[in-house]
Amino acid sequence: MNKIGIDKIWVLRLGSVFLGVEPKALKEVLEVTQLTPIPLAPPPLLGLLSNQGRIVSVFDLSQVLQIPPTGSDLAALLEVEGQAIAFTIDEVTGLRTNLSGTWATPSQEPLFSAVLEDGGKSIRILNPSSLLAHLTTRISAATPAPTSAIRTTPFS
Image 1: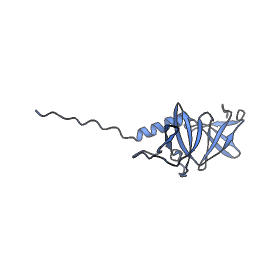
Image 2: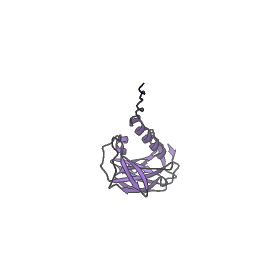
Image 3: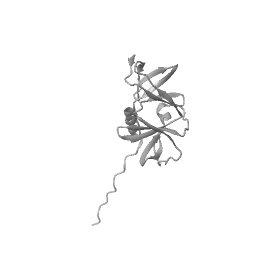
Image 4: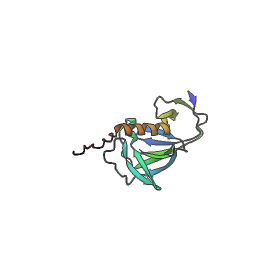
């Protein structure tokens, strides 16, 4: 076991899964009332929303984590490498502080940096950069390649 290098995390719940997010990454929690769908968007991309003049992609992490979808109208907005992304959540359970001495096991899952045991529940500490890379790769792999331009031969 290792000590984790963070002092506090926001704890978010998605279904039965608890996710930990560092305060510097979590910008706000949004109520998703008007989501603009993207035709032929591959899962887990749900659509787009506008937030303070920025277009933000909203994802369903239940598909990524392979848990039943919850159909929530809340989303956690993260700032990752200068890019805003959001994912649906069911609730914010609170801010967990004084973690400097807490022991956690390193996560075997690439989207998480550690797993913190807290009062009988496991909190998976989200690695925002890994999440962004995973979602980008997943969307890119599912997007069809553009078709080449039609080549015409001039009449002689």
